[in-house]
Image (cartoon, rainbow, N blue to C red):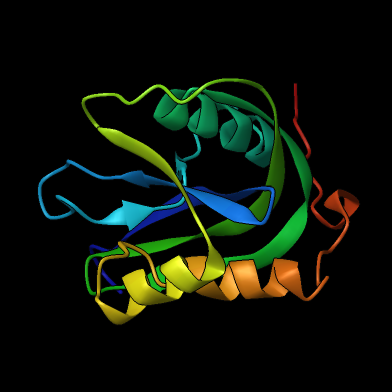
Length: 150
C-alpha cells in the first residue's frame, strides 16, 4: 500500500510469581491504558537487545529473556507494525515509573482479563501471551535468528 510505514517492534511479557508486568501509558492516544513493556527496534539493534532495553527504560527492571511466545502484527492504512513477543524474568532493578510510563505494576491473569474486558489494554496480545506462557507454550530463543552484517 502506498504511503504505509513499516515498523519492527518488540513486546515483552515479564512474569514473576504468577504475575505479569504492565506499564501504564501516558502518550497521546494511549493515556491510561496498560501495556507490556516494549517498543520500536532502534537502528543496528537486535530484537533481543531491543527487548531488554525497552523493559529497562519503561519499567526500571533488568530482565533475562526466557523464550518466544508469539509474533504480533497490526496493519492499519498508514502503518504496519509487527514483531516478536518475548517471555522474560526479572534479574535485577526495581520499579521506576517515568513520565512516559507513570505506573509500573504486576497483574494476575484474572486482572489481565479484567483489563482486556474493560478495554484498558493498549495492545491486544497480553492476555493471549500470558495464557500461552501459563500453558507452557514457550518457544526457545534460538527460534529467533538475529544476524548483524558488520
